[in-house]
Amino acid sequence: MNSLSELSRNEKIELLELYEERERRKRVDPLRYLQQHEKQYEASCSEKQVRVLFWGNRVGKTEWGGEETANFVVPDRVHEVEVINRDKQSLGKKPLPFIRPLGKVEAWVGCPSFELQLDGTQAKLERWLPSNQIVHIDYLRGKIWKELYLKDGSHISFKSYEQGREKWQSAGKDWIWFDEEPPKDIWEEAFVRQEAGHTLRIILTMTAIKGMTWVYERLYKATNNPDLFISMAGWDDNPWLLDVQKNQMARGLTADALKVRREGKFVKRVGLVCSWFDRTKHIRHYGTYDRSWTYYEMLDGGFGDPACYLLIGVDHDNNVHVLDGFREKGLLTAQIKERRKIKVGTLRINQGWTDNDNPRLQQELAEQPNAMLLIPVVKDKGDKASWDETLAEKLSEYGSIQPGTGEPRLYISDDMMRVNEDTGEEEHWPMQEIENLTWLERSSKQGEEIIPQWDDHRRFKHHFDFMRALSYFLVMYMKPLKNVTQPHIPDWIQQRANNRGSGII
Image (tube, rainbow, N blue to C red; front, side, top):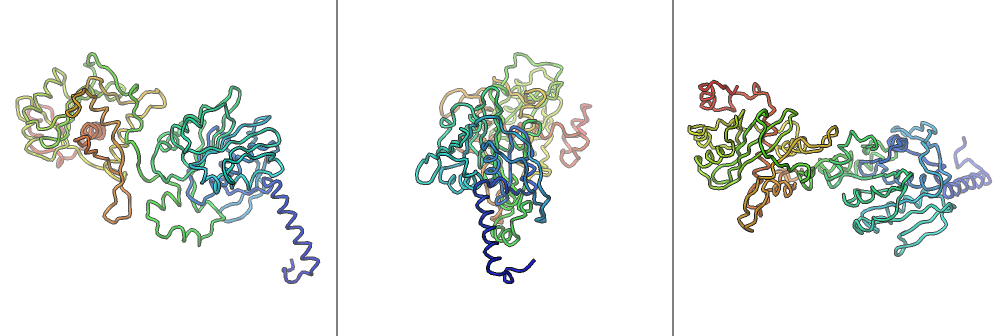
């Protein structure tokens, strides 16, 4: 082929006219010229009802959302797309599934604010909606779209998360595109916008900049949901993103920020630690105790900090039941033992643990009468970012609803009431801790990383003693005793256990 400089004037004019004609056709029917990288094409091929893209920045998630939305609402949709691999090589035209219902469709497009809509979702739809299909646009203000109407009667409404849940209530929809993470209540409200006989299809395109919010628990981890497609992608999946651009964007970002922005990963905990908690599921009344269960005890704290004691039963299905306990400050050792004796009654305690670094207190607890032989908690964070994250994962493991049963594996007695010293009113003290325990951000010594930690909520005048005691138990009670090495158990505890014929190790 001749270079442009070698062409005659007429040949250059002819070439320019061909280019302008192609550009005109692309403006009239841009979907016919659609190209997608392999991760975009993979998402387009899924026919699942809900498709969620947890992608990094500049990977093409909003572009894909505009393509999919445009290709759904227009009646004359395209059924194939040119796929480009990571090496920028064309893999040729590939087929797309047909998911659009017959007749006109109703769609919503939502994002955090109308200002962000202008340069985000709206800009992508302006690019991909065929201009000859649009018959009318209502504007919210300025150039911001409010309603868009197509030739066949199909209709798109544009909404903002700032409007609140009430503005997401209306008749049924066929399609909803959430660009960036919506509030949980808006997601739930929109999810019921399904008409009888119609399939509501939802796409969510987002980068996890807010951390492990409700989308992490409800969507990312919902691997057993047959109606849900999840996609992860990063900068290297976008063949059109140049190395020089990647390097420019990476400069100045921390390691955690790079995980989010470059790879689309979840890297930090935010919000409630126990977002899985449901009063109707986890709180239960116990009239009597089943003697065939296995019983354990857990003590956290001591004299200065409140002493938190838990009596725990484990049933034959390995469900954990917190049956009784107390949380009280300023107790002497004899008082702790006496209160524990009342709670335990005639039950046989299989094993107990303590998180207390006061050897004297541990030895006093093991003295008669009412001896308590408690093994110190072994704090091993494993592969988690912190010990607190290890505890939170263990709480979630038992507290979350199980796919097979529809029930959790953790239950708490409704009798665990105490009088609040400030208000004088009775409160369920475990529930008060569960519903107020949140994640905070704390800078490390390097000043770069964000490390998850539990909020100690000093306004509650305690350090979430129930939550720590419970999570310590969940971490410890399934550890094989043979793995609890000698250095973690004081000699005097081992000796006394041996003397009564019930060796700990």
